[in-house]
Structures are given as C-alpha cells and as structure tokens.
Length: 185
Image (cartoon, rainbow, N blue to C red; front, side, top):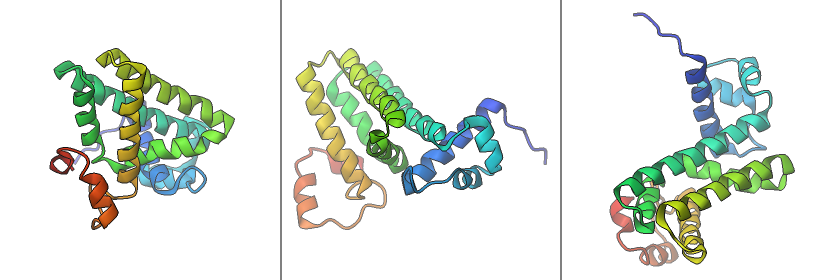
C-alpha cells in the first residue's frame, strides 16, 4: 500500500483540527503543543516550526472555528437569507461540540491582550456577516447572537447535542422553549 504524503497546507489543516480537539477538551492553559502533536501524529518540534507558539496555534483554532461558522452561514443564506435559516444552520453546528467549545475557550482566554484582539475580531466578523447576509438590524442580530450563545453554552455543558446528559427539570423546561430544537439535535 502506497502512502500519500500530505502537502504543507494539508498538514497545517490537520494540525489545526487536532488543536481544536485538544483545546476544546483542556482549554488554552491546560493544553500543550505536545498534546496537539500527538493527536496529529507529528512531532512537537514540527508543530512549533509551523505555528511558532502555542498562542498562535490556539488563535488558528479560533479562526478555524469562526471560518467554519461563517461558511455554514453563507451556505444557509444561499438557500434563504434569513435569521431563521442561519439559526437552523447553527443548530447543525451544535452537533460538533469541539467547534463550539473552541470558541468558548477563545472567549474565556480573551483577557490576554494578544488573544483578545483576534478573538474579538473573529466575533465581530461573524456579527457583520449575519447582518450582511440577512439585513438584520443591530437589535435583531443581538437577539440572534444571544440565543446562539445560550445554545452554545448548553451544548458545551452537554445539555443538548451529541452525548447529551439526561435532562433535568430545568433543562427540559428551558429546551422546551425552542421550537423544533429536539428534531435537529
């Protein structure tokens, strides 16, 4: 069996995907470049050669998560440029807990100025994309993101999504306020 060598771009993407997995499990402070290297099947010096620092690798993971969300929203807007369509598409992303948890770790680490500026830029870009694609007002976009953040937190806590824990009365009550949510997750 012949092994195909990955291009530099493919190897970099493989490392970013491994970084999203590692950082989503352990956060910024609790993840090492060695853990990412092991997940990707490469050496730790190779990770440092491509990304120089853990911080740059973390920011690449945040950017990856933001890019995936934006691409998903753009595809949804091609079908129907409405907040409802983008919301349904985000519901599908909730089935990828590593992606949403990566963003949450980015928000949590944003107190570090070197991390905060790129994380805020990523979030700002997503906000602008929602307004651009749907024509939503600032208040409508605020409400869209408020509901999305609640769903993101619930997904990270495993209240919904894959591997959800058994519902408790409060969570069943809260989830019952979302029309059709149970059909998607």
